[in-house]
Image (cartoon, rainbow, N blue to C red; front, side):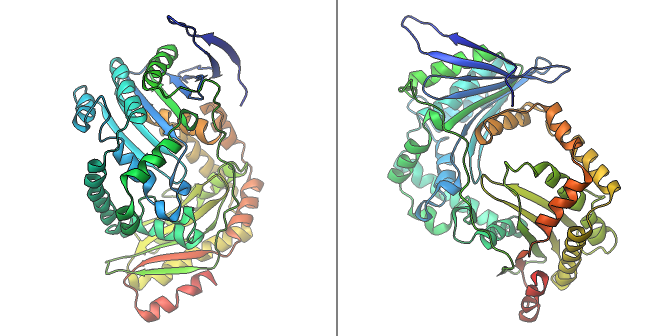
Length: 459
């Protein structure tokens, strides 16, 4: 990332104020928004993308903490805390928080991942000051009362139960455990019934104070906005709470690698009385900072990213063995996963696994055709742009980019990187990734004889 222009601005009030650093990271042209970044004294980063052609704005705060930052005893604490920040501050009750956004037709939510957490609100552009005030209040002044912890525990246990009732979702948690074992990346983001029941208000408050320091946060805002106004409103909210008390503090760097060990050739079966068997066959992938990720994206799209992909054609169109079949990639700071999911009748599970394994082996040895690669590049370029057609998606892109990479890439640059992928690069990454011995996770009502044959798929 190259900063095309920069300037230093000083905000003044009745007393001397420390200097904030502002940069223009991406110059908007042809409908592409201008991306700017300001770093406040105290280490808080504020990134915005201005799009004057829309009438909405999405405001979010990203925290540099996810489930991989938890000890085994704290598993689920990050997600638990996400819930609790909606329960009230010294200024607003839980009802006040939700009613404030409902009253202007806004949307507010949050999500927790393995390596980050995000809180956001989407509103009309004229209501952005309200969204900023509410979300900043939640992040800086959450009370985390014991009675709220106890009430919300029940909701989280219901969420865990809901996930376990959806084997198509649960199998991905099982696959993470298959690949990473009892490592933070292998444990579920939601935690377990035992760990959630064991979490106390005091432990969650300590977790909150440790990980929600301004140096660990990135504010992101996209839409019909003014960067300077957003910065002033955010700064006022954080200073009012006393969060920017250390003017010399610097933002923490993007998460670095830990060389997490991933398994190969492992099989895990979770017996469930379901109508379908749900399977994920996969292997170690690429870290999110790996330069080969662009070629990996093209490979993944061609293998299982659409109706014309190899796996969809072979498993569903030609044989009708599954309704849902796709491939996917997950990239973390130090490692990644590549997986193929399919849901099918239990009697068909071995046929589905054999076809998927045969296709992966064939592509590893022979690569994809030039036509497949060209089609995948076009599909990936189109889906990238179409996926950024609302302010929420834009906020996600700039917030995650700052938190995870520490830089911003324009949409044109992204499209250029995808278009520049060569057939040789795709074939090389196919050999490296698909040539590994896979692991397998299965949820379903498989009988003993069927279960004993699962190892054939990873042999």
